[in-house]
Length: 243
Image 1 (cartoon, one colour):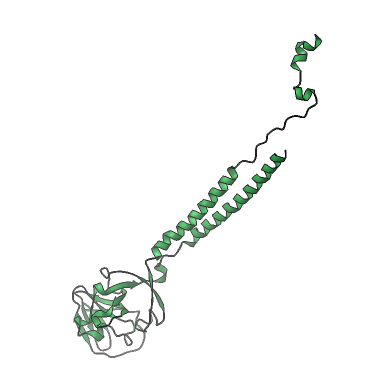
Image 2 (cartoon, rainbow, N blue to C red):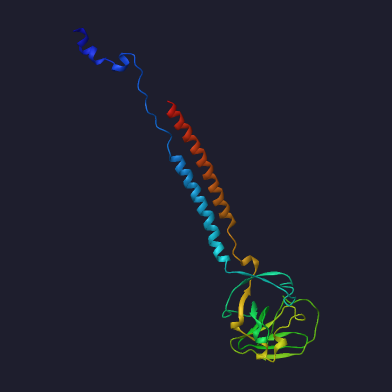
């Protein structure tokens, strides 16, 4: 009867422990997957940032072309042999001073040339023997001209027809420009003949290298963190299995 008292009942041990059997193994939880998920997320964000920075600016750059200048007609602005970035245009928005690429069919040549727009439809152009150019009665300032010294050429006086352009090369001695084709439409070419406009290299969009490198670095950090998290998790899982 002593073995059935309240004190003895409350202090009794599990059967296994009472008979000296080993305790059943206690299940232990493997390492959390949260660090791995976070690391993979960081890697994906970095990759997306790098790819988007390339695609956005790459799409803008895709519309540009490169023109290889094969003559000295536009020296010193564009020397012979230089590669010039060109933006394709249709000629409707061309203004005085723009350097354009155009089909020279109006001049009887099945070629594309690059020259500077001096006057547009309705303008009056006067060029005297020393080569000074006046547009609508005002002397044109031309700091871009090739410094070849004084030269003399037959004077020119034309009124540019509507929807047409009067073109000159920056190297006036070397350029066979509108002055050499006065018998056809006063040496002008149609706006519709324009196929592109020269632009500065600095104005051509390029991939944003800062964001591209930030994205690449972020992706690399995420990849390394994911590898570390995976290794740690595997080790913890192995310890649990051995236990």
